[in-house]
Image (cartoon, rainbow, N blue to C red; front, side, top):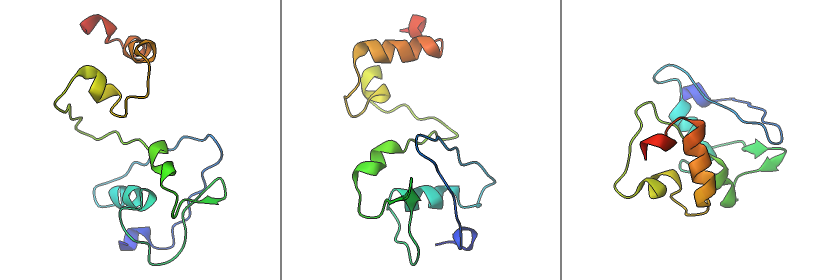
Length: 105
């Protein structure tokens, strides 16, 4: 991993939400890639609530990314809001109302 991510310890408690912010090159993307197991760890472990994420594929679904420049992919609004198709229409409409976009669609 990059030098910025050597000897890093981050404690995340149960049901806690965490935002990673920082300057360009600080290691935010590499940290996310490590959590999603997209880059190999040379040492150490990634623990959430004292459970190792290494080798657990389902935990990737618990991570969301909000890019600095949002991208709308081809497809319906529904597909963009819920790419895995697990949410109800009511949930998606509630989300649109919450951010003031329901009237737009």
